[in-house]
Image 1 (cartoon, protein in one colour):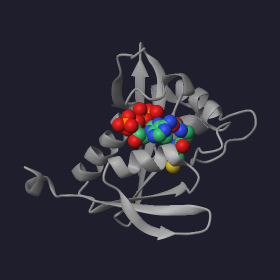
Image 2 (cartoon, rainbow, N blue to C red):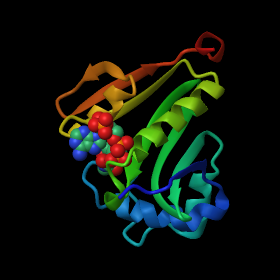
Image 3 (tube, rainbow, N blue to C red):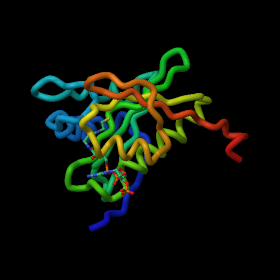
Image 4 (cartoon, rainbow, N blue to C red):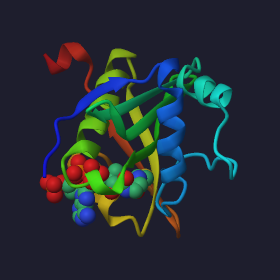
Length: 158
Ligand SMILES: CC(C)(COP(=O)(O)OP(=O)(O)OC[C@H]1O[C@@H](n2cnc3c(N)ncnc32)[C@H](O)[C@@H]1OP(=O)(O)O)[C@@H](O)C(=O)NCCC(=O)NCCS
């Protein structure tokens, strides 16, 4: 069954649902976000993560339920995608693709030239998704791959 999905940036009022989804993500061996304490994030920690200065968190909602998330972090104009996760029941509906597209749009708006990310070599689902979105290989380590997407400037894309 395909769900109606809304993609939007999270705000501090989403802190609770965000920490619930992170709890689920923490149990997934392929999740490449930060591991949270066993009891999960406190309300304050979740709020700080959602509204921190150099990070944007984008969520996928269906009927107000948060079912997917991804983060974009940047420092010294270096942009990194991390923490992509779609709740198991909602996979293969295009949500991972929608979230990644939203990160690409946000990065372009922030004048990023590239987006980098790291993925575990055995994570075939995510690798296939990133390849589909245009990422290419930057570096191959034994257990992980570094990928990069070179962005077009908004004027070149027009
Ligand atoms: C990777 C993940 C985010 C994909 O989310 P999703 O919503 O199921 O992905 P989509 O439905 O948007 O699929 C987009 C593309 O991803 C790839 N893909 C997704 N699931 C796949 C699967 N089970 N097998 C093969 N390819 C898959 C395909 O290329 C797919 O395109 P297609 O439908 O044209 O074949 C999801 O599986 C997940 O949360 N995994 C656990 C956490 C994780 O691995 N995060 C990434 C860390 S780097």
